[in-house]
Length: 318
Image (tube, rainbow, N blue to C red; front, side, top):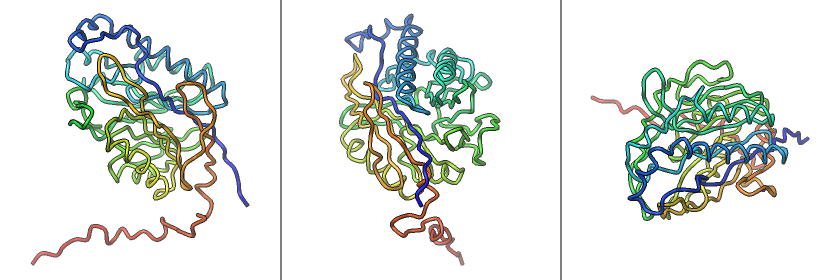
């Protein structure tokens, strides 16, 4: 007999909302005194999307990677280091906590974080429950630096990889300090951020930590990235028995000419999850988390039949 744990979930699919970005890259230093304006414009934009998702019945929403800013890692400029904020009491998180409480929706809010104790900066997703309470955070584990057919990315200039110091959280049910999983009213939620999706240990670790639903906010572009964008999540969802929501920016952000292809979606153990009609800037789907505990229709039992003992055999040395 089929059971149901239907959860309506939402992803944002949008871009920088600040309307006064300069037309030329050479003019970017003029933004030095406008960083708060940029943050505020994007926070207000995302708060509107949170309200719209809640009005459509969503129980949880994941905002985009570095959702309070343009994707500044396309070049290097120390100006943007001042954009980082505290993940507990910073202005963006304070606004998102209020929105979560007002609209009774769980919010995953990816921001540029500065750690008050160490001074280190991270690409961080903060998980907020429907009462506006902080459940914890996830810091991006793998940080890219390189270039492709569309442009360059220099994330290592701005923030480092996770240090595993997420802080104590009663909602975190995972033992791996690098990959927390948060018990929420809709299910057990994990987060991977953009580049993390390419590494095989990430989804495995989240599944081992008890995740049922994983959100992967991303800023991705380029030919190969677009080709594998759907394949990676599909394979991980089937292999690990997870629901995964992958979000990407959509459109281009002045003064850069990089085109973000969007194509955000949800998938699960049975493949693509049908999308729902949604307001502009949102992608939504109804996920039945009960599928995760039902027999697989393929007849496979991957958790039972996995052979960890042979994947990395020790080589005896004489």
